[in-house]
Length: 289
Image (cartoon, rainbow, N blue to C red; front, side, top):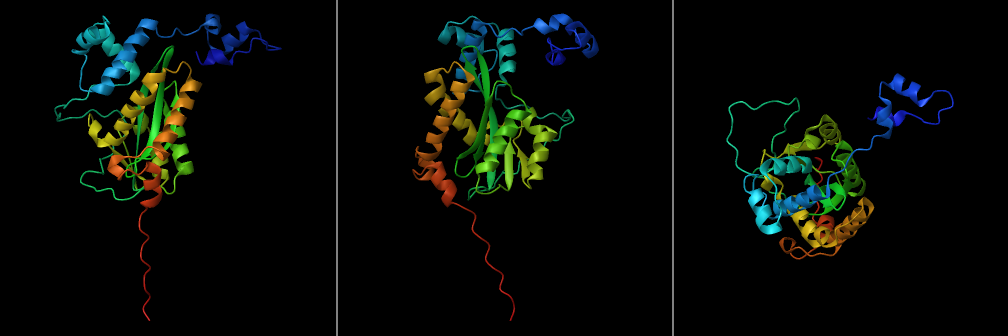
């Protein structure tokens, strides 16, 4: 399908038929338009997202009953599983440790924050991706947060969950930060285990840290950010277009960073803490007389 986009219908020398033959695509691909999700599927996905935000431990066996009771939606388990895979969400539960863990060819980095007390800004960053339901589709938001101050340093929104989304969010964070972190913590999602992502982080001289599988609490600060945004903005306004959603996120993030006081930060804003709680400068070494 990507090759079909290379065909020029008004090409001065080659007809559309000849171009399709060269590219190895059928002519019918030129007029193909992918079908979007049905209105009913979007309604179910919106409800699944709300339930996941309230309680991420509810699995596909219980979800049909919750959907029927609270939303009046009839959906069997297979449909729930298919839509949740499309949304990129997974039930959180304590998995048994197997003696052999399959290797998908991508390196899994150790969790570096166990027992560590993060005391200053730009000591540890974290990143995550969340799903957004929309009236005619869906979107994904990736954010990069400073662990100590809770400040969102960079974010990006897209209708696809790919490497370009995470790279854009990281570039925005690097462009406006006051300093690079010592450790960057993420989950083990495919976007964060890709060589493109880990190579970029290590190329900046930052140590890569990854949560244990299913350990959402290892990244609890950014998980709380998703919950706050969805209930305080997204579910209230129901943005119809991606541009409107992006403008709404920008306005909410600005308010979150610069206006909203946080009780755990002694009622300071993330921006205030990020600017003030810096790593102490190393004492100069006295030279021997």
